[in-house]
Image 1 (cartoon, rainbow, N blue to C red):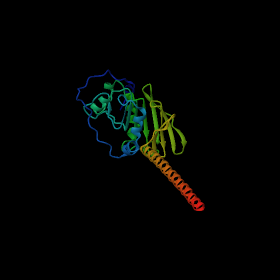
Image 2: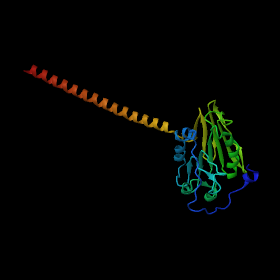
Image 3: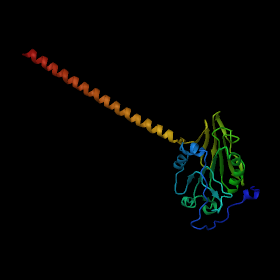
Image 4: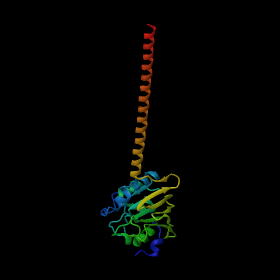
Length: 258
C-alpha cells in the first residue's frame, strides 16, 4: 500500500544504471482495448504530430514506468498512454521503459483505458502509485460509460503530492470533456470515442477522418477535371459548329453568285 510519505516524496538524484540495463518484459494487453481506442483511430499518432518535438517529447503506449530500471516487475506501472516533455527519448527506447531517476523527471500525462481485469486497480492502486511518481495528470477512459469505471471520463491533476479531480463537463448526454492543462487540449468522451480538441484548430483528426478528407479532396479534383473536360468539349463543339455554319454560308453564297 502506498503511504502518504510515498506520495509526497520526490525523485532521488539520478543514479547510474548499466548501459545494457533494461526494464523487464511485460506481455501485451490481450483485450484489444488499446488497439481499438488508442491505436486504430490514430489517437496516439495524432497527439504525436500535434505536440511535435519528437526528439524530446514522447507519446507512447504501454511503456513501463518506475523510479529506476528495476530487476523485476514489482512496483512497475505500465500506462496505456504516456506523454512526457523535455526528456531523452533514446534512453526510453534503450531501457524499454521510463526511468524517472534517469530522466530527472516523471512523465507529464498518463491515461488508462478501462478493461474488465484492471479497472478497479486503475481507480485505486494506480491512482496512488502515479501520484507517488509525481505524474502531473492521470486520466481514465471507459468507452462504455460507467460500466467499468465509475464514469466514462475522469481526470486528476497533482497538487501537493495528491490528485484532485479535474472538472468534467457535459456538452450533451453523449458528449463529455475535461481540460488537460498539461497538454493544453480538451480530453473528450464522445459517443464512446476518445477524442482530443484544440481550442484553436478543433479536433485532432482520426485516421478515418483524414482518409475521408483525402478522398473528398481527390473527388473534388476529379470533379474539377471532369468539369474542365466537359467545358472544353462543349467549346470545341461550338467552334466546330460555328465553322460548319461559316462553311455552309460560304457554299450557299458561292452557289448564288454562280
